[in-house]
Image 1 (tube, rainbow, N blue to C red):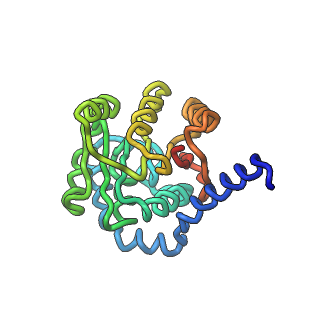
Image 2 (cartoon, rainbow, N blue to C red):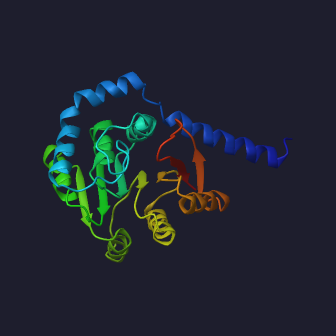
Length: 235
């Protein structure tokens, strides 16, 4: 008879391996081809940003306050795209200019993205309107503080389920932690979480705590050298 500890470890290992098999990482050449085919969408978002005369907040395509594509962010984009291929209902905190939202929509033609954003940038709503017009019925934006919005939706018995949570909101650790708690409340075991900006020490510490407390099981795809994110499964 096998020791029970070994059986448990074997089960956990099999579970982790099954998550890895869920994600076939998109080939870089294939991904760049898809980007080229949809270049007009990204160009239009960039045009909206430039017409707003406001500095662009850093995202998965651009470094902060620049509008020059950052090559070091390709791996991050491929990770997002690869996970989104297998995701149908996505909750995103932090829409910004909609670049990650657009990747979600392009990766899976049947997906729907529910976004939360405080809409402090002049370009945010015009960028959302562009995406909404070109992907009708597939994206929803809740304007305002995500924690307040999610609290209200919870009290209203919001009947939504999600399989992917992308948390890219405030960098304040207290607010970010509440973001996590709300997402966890709406999540089911096995749902995927993308926790962004772990180069910020306070956000990285939160992620390490979630792992230590076994709230999430981490997994890894491509290394993200710029604006790194952490990937995991809700336990």
